[in-house]
Amino acid sequence: MSLRKLTFLAAPLLLLQGCTTVQARQAAPALHQGLVSAADPRAAEAGAEMLRQGGSATDAAIATMLALNVVEPQSSGIGGGGFMLRGDAKGQVVTFDGRETAPSGADPQWFLDDSGKPLPFMTAVISGRSVGVPGNLRLAEEAHERFGKLPWATLFEPAIKLARGGWVLSERGREFLVNAKNRAGHQPEGLALFYGADGQPLPAGTVLRNPALADTLSQVASHGTVWFYAGDNAKAIAREVAAETPRGGAMTPEDIAAYQAKVRPEVCGEYRTYRICGMGPPSSGAATVYAILKQLERFDLHALGPKSPTFWHLFAESQRLAYADRERYLGDTDFVSVPMKGLTDPAYLAARGMLISPDSTMPAVAAGTPQGIALAPPDGDEPEEHGTSHFVAVDDWGNAVSYTSTIEGSFGSGIMVGGYFLNNELTDFSFAPAGPDGRPVANRVQGGKRPRSSMAPTLVYDRGGHLFMTVGAAGGATIPVQVARALIGVIDFGLPVDQAVALPVLFAPGDALAVEQGTYLEAMIPQLKALGHGQVSARGLPLKTNAAVHTAAGWVGAADPRSEGAVARE
Image (cartoon, rainbow, N blue to C red; front, side, top):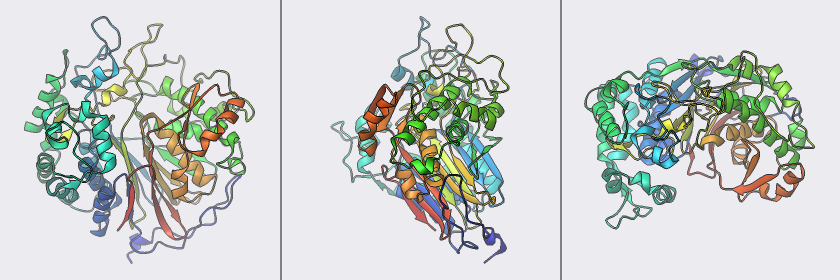
């Protein structure tokens, strides 16, 4: 075993505030401890194959992202963007921002009609207005240059094989084709790929092939991302987007060529005895996850447990506070001032948490006044987010990656180029550029700007500084809640990681509270109402969490049982 594979050393037992002792570590990891957890077993296997070839967690994550583009085209891919966290065993975290950007000609009136009113949501989505310049490939290139071990072209081999050789359409995949035909079948290319002569989605079990995507991936594998962001491919993207943009300012080849992934400052803070690290703006993920956790830190969540209505009440109240700040302050820091230091200040969050009572509900919730803000901007009117895919990877050197990739809604904008769908990410901007008082909202549309995101890829270090957990989720605005729930499940409840990601979800971004349909939370609705929650309903929620935790037996991965997700080991 090489010295680099001896990066995990023995650590003391982790004694948590208000918690039982969780899994202890062994002295050093065994050989072949690498794994990948993803939303589709074929994509997880693509990443694991990179690990078997001696690749890093970064290599595995990139191969997984590319394979997901083939087998899960409704959720993510090279026509979209994402955020990646890479952490090593020494505690260094690097965050990559591959979020899409608005074209340079976009302006704050981008989603307003001729009378100045916001467009209907689907009118905006299925059009060129919704498409941002894709960022995933530039993110992958930047991360690979820093942390990759295998040749760039090797990472594309599993995805190219799937696209050209064929993959089996799953039941879940067919459901998306039924529910989102307006996007998947918006153009002839999508109709020909996914639907029969009768216009109906092909049956589950059909072997699908996407030679156009295989050709695209082969070109990027051979020539690098310059092939995607310049030349004929960039012209094709701009041409298709402009043809469906019913106003000036449409995306140009120059907009595409100018795109750059960015290394952003990580956002880290202490919860219990753990260091929680996440993605900063334009993602709202880290700030929202951390606020939910930190506002609950004074409560003994372990003693309450996951079957306690009081716990779920507290969890809902903390969400209400966190999402109020999220809506008011978070945006692209290249364009707006975001008081991240104030929003994640332990004293500020402790004060916010003191507003929470275990016996009653706050009658009204408003954004706080964190340090660094003089006048809070008005709330925006962003539509609800959907879609996305998350995956995690761990390698033998003790490095871990948490990567969330998205094209926003199911099949994005419905516009296809080169076998892949283009995103509808710009609909994550606020449609109305200003509040009632005329002051601009933080998340308004601006040329070159990145829309606010809910994506929350997260890495966790224990009190000894050892990498302990990698986690993230898909599901639009529910993402921070899913991640916070999984962290509480492992850290506070002491649950194995598979049980933590299987915990039900309660979603309370405002006054209305939704509990996951078909779970034991439904039976708690009367008790939640008795605590003062007036608007409580059971709903099907878009949930999909993937995670891995380091235990005494080494790394253990988990995929959300609600999804087709799987864990693959090297």
